[in-house]
Image 1 (tube, rainbow, N blue to C red):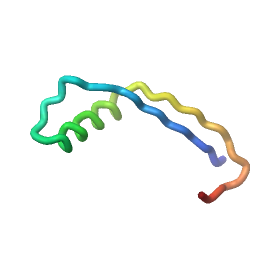
Image 2: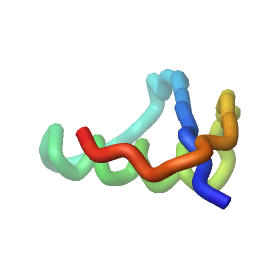
Image 3: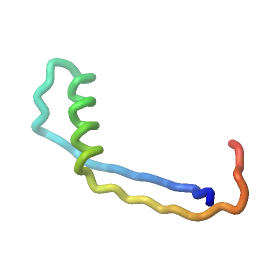
Length: 51
């Protein structure tokens, strides 16, 4: 089965210690991926579409 899926993650961190904005982004991304609150919608699609 093929699904069309929309995924949304919105979170904010105000306590990340890092040496650069890039490092802060990586730390926040890892934290969000391992424990963030995700919202999603999935619907089956009958045929594969290309965009």
